[in-house]
Image (cartoon, rainbow, N blue to C red; front, side, top):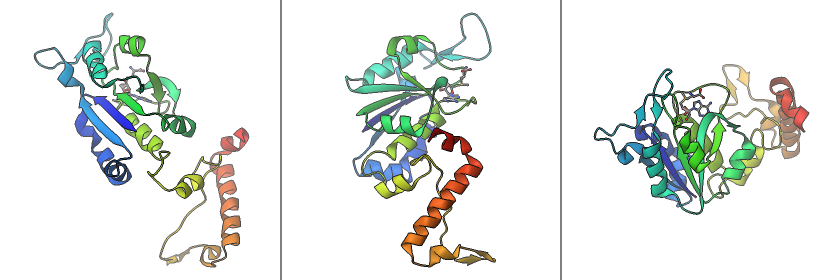
Length: 222
Ligand SMILES: C[S@@+](CC[C@H](N)C(=O)[O-])C[C@H]1O[C@@H](n2cnc3c(N)ncnc32)[C@H](O)[C@@H]1O
């Protein structure tokens, strides 16, 4: 999959060049390009924002630099994503859907947001990462890319995906690693027993117990 990220703050994206996403790019599974919208500004000072018509607080990102930035990367396979508090709430289902696309273009808003004509012209998929407001679309873009990448073949193991929280409509069971005893806090005996059936039974029970306790709403959906 190819991903183009359009942003005024390219330096925010060092995260995508680390750990699992870095390996996916090195293995040719993912290609991620970070593109500075400022390069497309026709203003002599590379300005990309201006005051909103009608007044109000803050600055808005202008349509022209974003229009030209999108046109420089868009082709017939592109799907355009715009992180926004007004968008559809992000979910594991949406992450899976997006992981099937060939080319994603992310437009990162900043300041008070983006001139509405970007939405009117390109009809991007607007996605919210929650009912709160962030200062920019850079973090939501990284959240969405990180999450959808996990569903692309070869990025992580299939087993990791099936065992994960939300994959079966429930939260994951608690996990432990060495040492088996840390200051008297002991790992449950069953996990040390080597009895795979018992381990499986314990994990299912813990998964249910945890979901009931922390996210009972997930059980209502089943
Ligand atoms: C300060 S916000 C703009 C908020 C906008 N004026 C409003 O009230 O809906 C600036 C940018 O941050 C991003 N953003 C903020 N909160 C977000 C959220 N919950 N989900 C996705 N993106 C968000 C969007 O890219 C947005 O254009």
